[in-house]
Length: 265
Image (cartoon, rainbow, N blue to C red):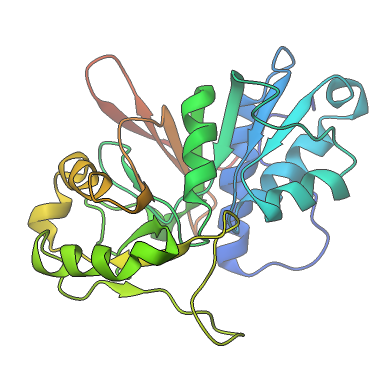
C-alpha cells in the first residue's frame, strides 16, 4: 500500500477536468477501502473504473499477487487481464470483500442508477455478494434525487421476446410513457447486453423517483424483466471527485447518510 493515502496521480497523459475528478474519486476510494487484508475484490464498470484498477495496481505486486479480482463485465475483465491481476468469477467466490463500481447517478440516501453501460445485472450480483459496496463518480453524478441529471431513464434488462410487452406495461401501467428500447449506435438494431438480452430505458417523473425502491419492485415484477438498474440500500459510501480537487463523500451510518468533504492535500 502506498504510504501516501492521498489521490496521487499515476496517469501521465493530460486529463480533462472531468477525468481528473473521476481519477480523484477512484484513488481516494481505493485508498480508503482496498486494504491489505482484502483478498477478493469486485471491479465494476464505467468510465471511472480504469482509475480504480490503476490505483490498485499501484499498491504493488506483493499485495496483489494473492488477490482475486471479479469483473462485472467485458470492460472490467479486460482491465483486470491487461493489468496482470488475477481474474476470478463470482461462482468461485460467493463472498467478495469489497466491490468498487461506478454509478450513473446517486441520491441523498445512496440509492443509485446503474446500467448506462448495460452491465447492471452482473453489477448487482457483485454488489450483493460484497461485504462492502462502494461507488465512485465525478461531481455530476451527485444528486438529491435520481433522474435529476441522468435523464435517459431507469435501465431495465429484458429477455428479447418479452420486450414489447414490458414496454407496454411500463408506458401504460407503471407511468413511463417515454420508455424506449435502447438502440445501438454503431450497428443496426438494439443494444445487446453481455447476457444476450435487450435494454429498455424508462424515464419516470420525480414523484416516482423519490421512492426508487417502490418503482424498482414494481418493474422487477413484470414478466420478462431480468434486472432493474436501481440499486437501493446497497452502497455503504459514495465518492465524488470535484472540480476544485476536493472529494465529496456520502457515507452510511446506523441512522442516516452523512456527507463530508475531503480537501486536497
